[in-house]
Image 1 (spheres, rainbow, N blue to C red):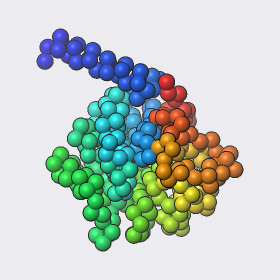
Image 2: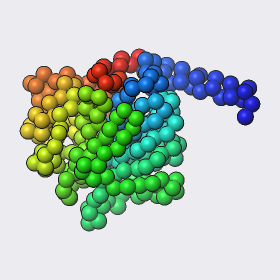
Image 3: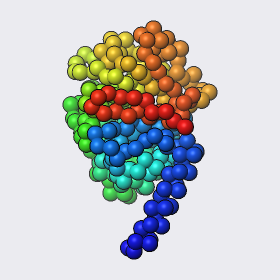
Image 4: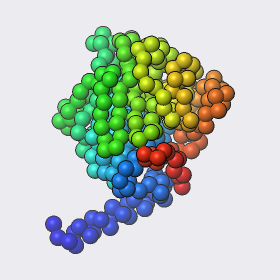
Length: 289
């Protein structure tokens, strides 16, 4: 490839990044090329969930919202300068978490897809779930079950699987619960886990303390397990939910819990994409445009 062609490609890429920044897709202040810095992106996918952990040009993606947000997530990942996703986690087989994953798998290089193992009798037969399975086969993606205690690394970040610890027929309560650690900062991502799963994880034991909490089930009252959350003891929380959604998320009980415990929180329906910069010294929220 000639230097002229390379220059043209670079110019097109930079123009695309500038365009996406202007559209609010990518915060201007993100600089993924600084050694030791990890970015936590909670991508606004409406009434769904998508969390991206980035170091340099690699990332871990947990969910990608509904199918019509798949392109949004793929474009966001590209705009971050991520060349490949080391891991993609399909937290549980509900459309507002996995619907957008096929689009991501088709457009981003993925090393391995992880999902919790679900008993055959509880496996869904929805078109959304079947489309994900079809895409895994079509794109020759390596797929594995993740189990409690498994750890996965991304540069200076480590992701540990904390749940589910038992088979539960309700798929929300089969969510992969992920705890990401960077230096002294930990991030808890609950998927749609409700009190039943959180209770079983709490009884199973472990280190749950996390400075940042991605609220379970979009801030639903059904995900407020006070003993578990007391162990997490977050400084800040993020709620991924859609504007004026029909579920009433986040529920007042969840907001009351956060306020009573003096936990600062952010909402994607108010703030759009939410980004944190994390390094060995701590974390800071990066302001979007």
